[in-house]
Image (cartoon, rainbow, N blue to C red):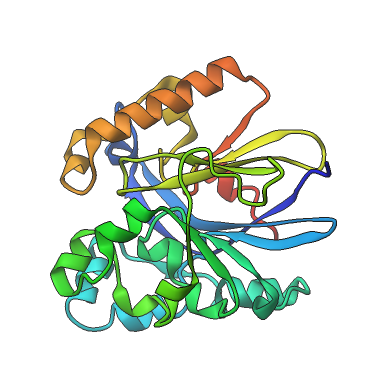
Length: 263
């Protein structure tokens, strides 16, 4: 079975105090948190996209109330106005040919570009979708969701996945449930073309030292996420880190992941 080629992409970033991102971090240090997406392909299959960044629609959807509150709480710098779709085009990938998009969770920095992939099946957890489906206004914002980012035909394109789901029926790309940061959050695991096992961990932690040291975010983040579930998921990643030294775990927003972004 051929391994997957994978490429880290990004179209924007926000910033946060390190102390919010990991217990014991500095309140003086600011960390740049890139919104990353990952392009996957292999001989005979793909392209597959894991998350899809901000896109320029984020600026539109946060221009008025209540979306501007999202921008106030997590101000974003968009580094490419063409979004992940434009980045793919420059790499020779037509967004309309992307047949599979995996959504880790429904926060705006992970689904902002979803409208740019009109022919894709959208793989997501039922629990995550049910937690946000139909929400509007402040209720949606409380969940980190900007409904205007989501395609009108999305419900017809959804395919439910959860822990252990085998996306292509050959064991090459499997789903892990990573709840806590968002209801129904998922990650995916695969083996790279070079034989390295890789886990795309979404926002299960924000910094790689989180899973290495089993250190959760600051407790005040419990206002926005399920902190006990976050801690259980983080403990799971920590065990994987200890038990599988060759496994490469990539949190979406970690600067170590951003360092892999293809130019």
